[in-house]
Length: 490
Ligand SMILES: C[S@@+](CC[C@H](N)C(=O)[O-])C[C@H]1O[C@@H](n2cnc3c(N)ncnc32)[C@H](O)[C@@H]1O
Image (cartoon, protein in one colour):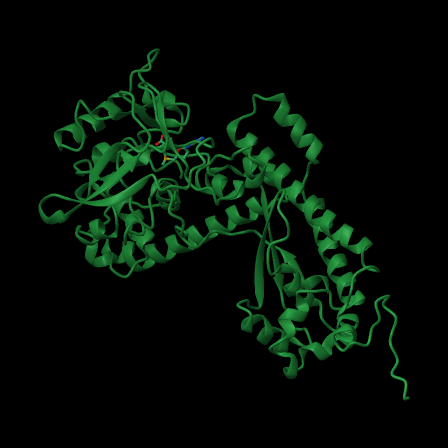
């Protein structure tokens, strides 16, 4: 029975998932032949002993000025901040005021790739793979028109896809570890496919070596800085705008950016970024990347986490086993109710059970004398019955299986919550260790919460009302005290 239930990572291999926010995809130290300009640390971006931006940042700004994208009066400018590079207000900026605007000709997206030398060979590729190949190639070209932008991109972030094996071992037992490994495997397989189908057959376009590390770097750059879901633009890197950092204290869901028409008859498109709160001169402009992301998603996509408790989540995966004697009927019922053979339920710390979870669990566990509910005459009404406890045996089984799964998941971590909290309170942790400690403590708290919910339910099993009693009541065969009313002939 335990095989019916499994906990699995909330893998995010589907690219640039929806949301109206920044869709950072993740990075690695690249081959020496290419231009390696900066690591995550802000140090490489500032001149020694001053906070003056490095020549690379100054050249980037100068380039944007020459191209007319910015001017001396622009509200914000790139600067060195604790998050690496960021946008610093050059004057007071009021809430909702435009901070910057970037015309379409400066965007790097699948259209830019299609119009480039490699456009023809990239036409059948996934958008992210095409853009990844494009930025890798441009980075290798001394005379690339994008040189000054590419020079300010980080070589890495704290995204877990860049962690060493030793760093990843701090995530032992966590869902984040599984999802990180899945994402790396996904990128690895996309790399091999692209190498075989595009890079090797078109060596004249890719005369330099492209490694998996380059591919992972590009993936990470896109995951952490590309915007998506922008008026038909599903994946777009926007130089300058991609310097905007995230602040946990901004909790407005209002979109901070939009695509606008510009020029005669609005034929040119502009990416416009607004500040969601007022900012004083000299302060950093921030936005909220995505209120809906869990800490694991933030860690994987951007390389940071938040302390807000509802960023802690755990995904429970339930599935109808093919070896279940009622597999066909159960699958049919699940599918008629918008679910499938597997269902994923995201538990968030401090919140109640995800909707649809209890009926699905009861369906998966249905058997024995309750199996009559699977008969076709119940097909229309069965989901309604599953919304409520079906039988003592069924409810007891779901409690036991969920609790066993929680205990088994908890036993896979190397540390206790208390040990994690002590480490965090001690402070001064390396940023990656801080992420690992926060993630594993958060996941364990959610698992304890799930276990607690089903423990409480187990204690109530004798008081719950089950299908048979409800049915008798509906038929008017149960009295107010729950006694069975016998029909007695007059
Ligand atoms: C869209 S880029 C922003 C520009 C970036 N700071 C840079 O130096 O190029 C997103 C990346 O910035 C960093 N970042 C943004 N907000 C952050 C935050 N609140 N805490 C830590 N790092 C942050 C992370 O490395 C993230 O992957």
